[in-house]
Length: 424
Ligand SMILES: Cc1ncc(COP(=O)(O)O)c(C=O)c1O
Image 1 (spheres, rainbow, N blue to C red):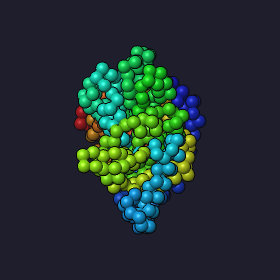
Image 2: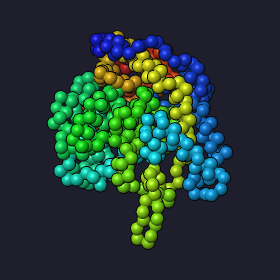
Image 3: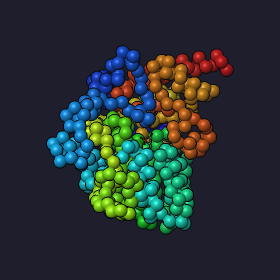
Image 4: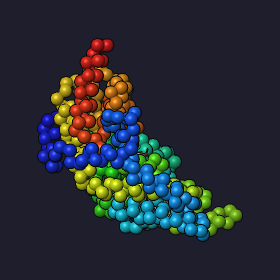
């Protein structure tokens, strides 16, 4: 364990707090609420908090520009359209997409993945084909593929992971073969933090003509992402994990695949022409955006991107890494702790178990000390089954967390050990 920590630390410049956390925290109104005084929020993999800049942008949209976009020939409607399309361009630039038409607004990463499973999968995956996922996937990047396999008659196959949480890729050329039509893979596991070697997997998939969907939900707010360089065919993420509002997400796709793919939702705004018995579809990206869209969500997401940019993803990455390394070091000093996964490359997510204490009991105990952690299967039951457990406790970090938060958490963990040992 210590050796792995050393190599993690050596491979990156690890400093203490690389960000001015106090200053950053002041931008987040939730931390200045009297009832949240001293809150140590360590459930960032579930959702992060929103800065005032994002909240203000949403309110400003409703106060100044609210109307139904793409529908009215009047000033406010045009403004709403402009706001939405500006947000789309910002998202496109942020993830290095070739054009804003390749950015489809969805409700979240889950919906983005379902769009591909339905709209692309049902059209292009046939009986006898293979869909490949990893055992690290969040249910959002697993269940849609189970259903697509059932609908199309394809076989769903899995890349397993080893005791460190790294994907086992020794037989990559067998696992990815001529039958493989689509590989759906996470960029960062929400359960173990593992960041699979996507370059290698994407190159292997493309070598046999398979498409790759990357689930970027846990990555896009943590590391610089360039979907064009990554060469992902599809890329999905949620706004709420990157300080944007709840209810807005993004599907990116290579233009040709998006053009060939069928829409999944049907109704207003996504049509080109409507006749009695059939219709034709609008151009990209609107063909996928049926009904009135969450413009305030898109505007909030754009504000979140601005906020991320003012800090810088490289600094965010370094900060999160230093917190992760420090937390792993402190956890390693404790006995009766089992940390799950110590992958070669990892995000700021640590799953663990304190011997003899159910993760839910631990989370409740920590909540009484104003520390929010996650306990459960983390919507990754295949990870839990591979580990042979039903649940874990999980901490995850973001820009407003400090080394002090970790010290506070570790002290509370020691206290929990003492408390629960009385009942054993
Ligand atoms: C890796 C990963 N993929 C997908 C999702 C689904 O995100 P959402 O619930 O916002 O659709 C999550 C959410 O935790 C996640 O961690």
